[in-house]
Image (cartoon, rainbow over all chains, first blue to last red; front, side, top):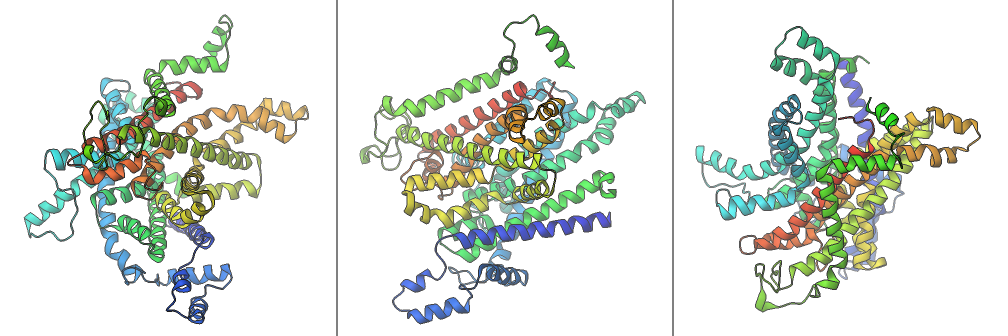
Length: 319
Length: 305
């Protein structure tokens, strides 16, 4: 297992490098540069502008610029935001926990819905329950998160007036009331993201379960007289989860996309809304850093999926 | 198992062909048939709509601000008194065109890369698959936003605001969605290229190009068509998401996502403004997904259930 883990980590490094290279090339190919304002600003003499360009290495060949950027990123020197004049890493670290909290809880919710529903649907394929679950799953992943968000706001905030639709970090209350408010404002974003994920996960779980149920060793287990619930949970589910983990890992980029949209709708101060506001404000260092953080998170969660994979299927870590 | 009985029965049935069989299986998926009709109606509506509904998309009428559905404005009006039905017809053309064009890009790129990776036996195949996996682990929406943020102004200057953004969005969405197609095509090629009929073609002296185009590709097409269908839905969602975040088409181009973006600040007084475009996106996406599901039943011979 240890060796397997090490190998997985070593595989993650080149893909991180590859992603950073893609990001850097995109930035380098893009028209315009951060010092274009200096060139047009009459208060800055041209030679000062040129000196600044030389100082920040903007005239260096591209591979040197990439290396500089990479080394700086690795050392934690992510530059400072043009707009808020704060170091990018402090800005991101302030907001990352909120994003992780929302994404984490919504994934948990999705699993809590998808596994029981998918397993139960697979034990009775083509029953009424299965058909209803399937239809809901279809509707669920065809509803884009931004529309579900708006529908939720319409129903729960405007019509019923149950939940607040703007997320605040400074709730003016303490103790149990604070906790209650915190939960109330998190319900809608987590539901929006979680239900969207649950929809596709349910389908994965169901079809993976159906693939395993047909196998001979399940018939053997049943023939030995093991009860239905035990066969399903101990024998079918463990093996069915292996492809599900892969499929969930493939969904992770989409989860982050959904998180950006949800954060924007409910004005959650996470890194997704930071990305949007920085794009609208032309704040290039923040945009680059946030995109890179998203990429790192995707690679990191893929790594977790790989570890889970090795735990679920010991044959893989032996290979 | 099923295939054997079908093959023997097909002797009696006249006019049997794989397409025929596919259509027969597609028809059995009732929701897919309904969805096909629905999607066709949607396309006819956005293509022929402006000839029937002759209200201009930017007629400002302050006496009719934020009205709910009425006879003169079936889908209501927005904050400037513009007719939402007319704007949705116009926006639907863009949204559906983006979906179809981006799907074409992703299918063409995916098929090319998948075919190359499937046919090459050396380092090229490995390198291409590594690239595919790398692209799969890219955070798509952030990257999409980044690319649009960086290249928007340049393309706007060259092609004009609407065409420039259209090209950019189509290329970027298509360029970030080819990976599943590439994987499918590669997997198909890997198994098909070893089949006897390809070997026979090779023995008869068919060039690699002819083997691919005449023999392997037609047999690998089923999964590609299914993936392509799903891609249309994904591209429509991606475009609407961009517009919804305010980073898609220019503000005066009312795509469905843009309408939602404009409507989200008036939810309490003009819910219809958000519900109609949102519903349109949902119907388009659900219909396409069901069509894809029906096509899976029709074209994926291995799936027996």
